[in-house]
Image (cartoon, rainbow, N blue to C red):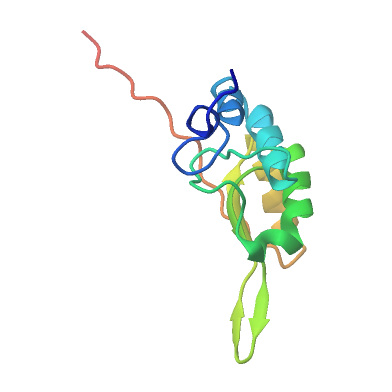
Length: 130
């Protein structure tokens, strides 16, 4: 018996099989690879996104975003730079990376137009001493 659409996809149309891969992604590299696959159209599930595919405006930068995700920056959100009539939208990307990658991005900011804002990783709460 063939599975029904409700057994294959969630209420947003995302593939449940692709969602299962996210449960096993325990590293930044694994999350980056899954995001790259989604950007390339090889997955129909992206964590914290309620759509099967990214917005149309992302198409021109999707390949570069996939490359970033495979090279140490797990991207969370982004937008392309656009100029329409008298208005402009600045290109940006946010994400998660190792401390070493953050240092490299900060250094790159000193010699290019790249603006990097880095935040230290949250530390787990330390239980009070008895």
